[in-house]
Amino acid sequence: MIGIHRFCFNHTTSFRTQINLTQVRVFCFVLTSPQYFDTRTRAVLSTWGRRCDSLYFITESSNDTHDLPIAPIANITPGYEHLTQKTVLALQYAYEYHFNNFDWFVKADDDTYIFMENLKTFLSKQDTTEPVSFGWISKGYDYHQGGASYVLSREALKRFNEGHQKPNTTCRKYGGHEDIEIRACLRSEGVYMGNTRDEENRERFHPLNFYDLFVGPIPDWYKQRAALEPVTSYECCGDDVISFHYVPWNELYLIDSMWYRFGRER
Image (cartoon, rainbow, N blue to C red; front, side):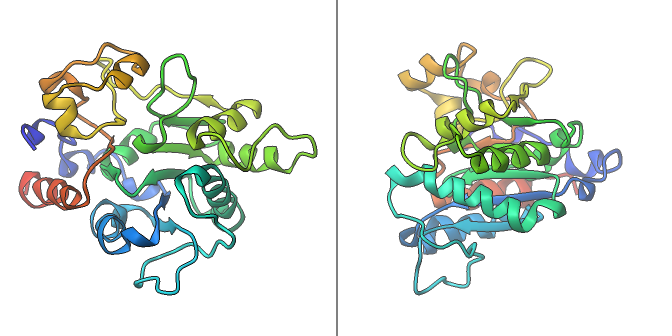
């Protein structure tokens, strides 16, 4: 966790005097599986997930929910190859039961870490009535990388649901790569991808964990898909970073403790 102190929120205590973050209502849904209930899932619930205004885990049926907030969605097929179905059902559930109560809808994985105050501060400057989504944009592929998390406005979620209701829809419910298929449906319904870089053109959403970005080496796939030339050390990420991916479950606790217990202004 070298240098985590550099990635600040410009401190929570100072920007709360300018922005009332309680007015930015965020619904989070996190993809997980029963084998991770006691590790990844519990870690998300105990760390960044509790700062969502509402949090549900999306998983296939399990006899023991471990007292986790699991969305009551039936017929989810287990397996990585079925992530498209899992995410489509989650977005449809969010639209049917939670649409009117929230402004923004966040999809994440159980190995994602989200700095919720940074996300809410960013979203407070956006318009949820716009058909827009936010996340890490993959160069040349025109989609948000799913593990870095992505955010749909209320209008984007509405259009996604409408797209799936059309008789001759091109929106897929099964197969393919989840993030690519979700984006294809949103694109067909006129939802555009908003800019998420900071004033110095640095990324806020990250499909890698902090250590890999800070220390390296940067994987080849990331170099090929990154819109900007990746750099390590302190310039790897924006100061108001929003997310990291591929974070081991024990490091979710570590990041959370280092920031919220030791890193904040008191």
